Amino acid sequence: MKRELINECRLSFAPLSVNEAFARSAAAAFASQCDPTVKEISEIRTAVSEAVTNAIVHGYRNCSGQVELHMRQYSGGLLTISIRDKGTGIDDIPRAMTPLFTTAPDEERSGLGFSVMESFMDRVTVKSAPGKGTTVTLEKRLSSRIPEAAGQVG
Image 1 (cartoon, one colour):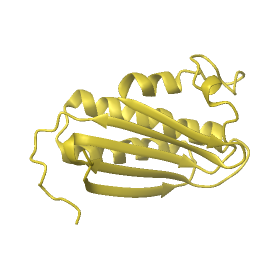
Image 2: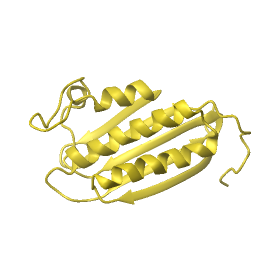
Image 3: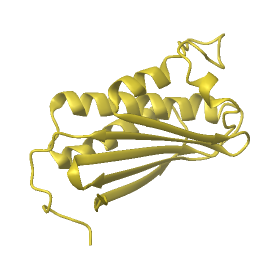
């Protein structure tokens, strides 16, 4: 079954810790169009927060750039949110996704970001290349309570 795009939004912002809250709120506002449950909104906010924090703290540790947030709503209640940086990248994705692994052991980092994302989303995909950046795509099927055709992009 082909997914039909209903709505999408792209945002770009500086990799500053104050923008993590902005991204979390923007994702919640976008998802709210699907009339999700309070629990689903909370899970989305938390997963986006973890992904954006990773981009800021790890992706742009020694460089500057932009964090990109691309949110899409598809038919069937599917929401995807991609968080992209063009920073340092990840050389070993499976290792980076291992609980408690961190590249910042001297800081207050627990190494649970990917585990948190995976616990709240239906699917988490990570694509990365050293020196080219990282894209984390979060997918969640929402228990939408509004009709599919309400406001389709077209």
